[in-house]
Length: 163
Image 1 (tube, rainbow, N blue to C red):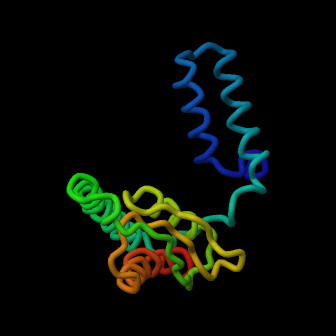
Image 2 (image 1 turned 180 degrees about the vertical axis):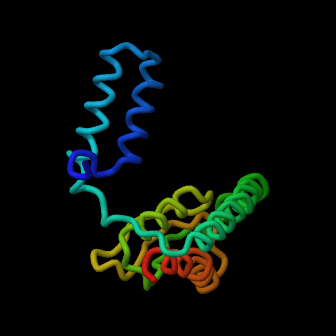
């Protein structure tokens, strides 16, 4: 069964989304949904990183709270900067952050955090996964920002994916 359906949650999600998009429970829709739910995970199996093994679910929940809080604070900080400061007074820059984490799943989550947080955008990760390039909308203190990323995001992600 594992050979036919390598990722049951992905297959189930694809099937449900297919049904919702088609808004039909006809036999042809159900059959095409099943075929899609089986074929896509099989065809994309080689594109996915290593199987995820979450070792510390409590840390993951705490990280979710930290990320939601940081996103909320960042929304207001970016809005305030846009509404109250001239563009030449906003210090946007690219920043290289040295990474200790090497797990591809952890790096994928870090990229999502960076892209979803207003004011930051993931640029690239070095081939050897040693540094991360991000764009920061308004950067006051480079060292403090790097320390914040490492302590608030990288360290918990390492506990979740690498411990």
